Image 1: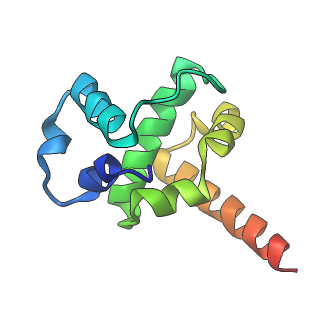
Image 2: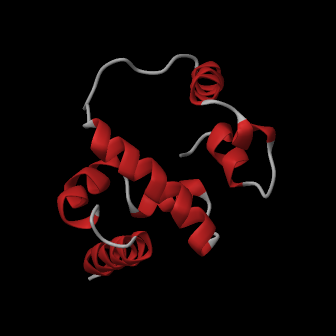
Length: 109
């Protein structure tokens, strides 16, 4: 979400938007000098829902990928998936934004 590849997907038009998933991952792998093979693994359901929600979020609000990821990182998406994946995607995004605002307000106090 913080890569040039993600930024390209945020553009009004970029060739990356029409590329297949293997090509996009290859471009990302080249950009970061190798994707990490270890770490936390999330279920396919969580990953699919997260990816769809992140893309929809961008088109719904106009926010860029790195701002979206600040508001709802992978851990947050994984934690919220059980209750949010059955919601209308716009409602889920609004709720994720509200959670982020509450966390931010709490940190400022």
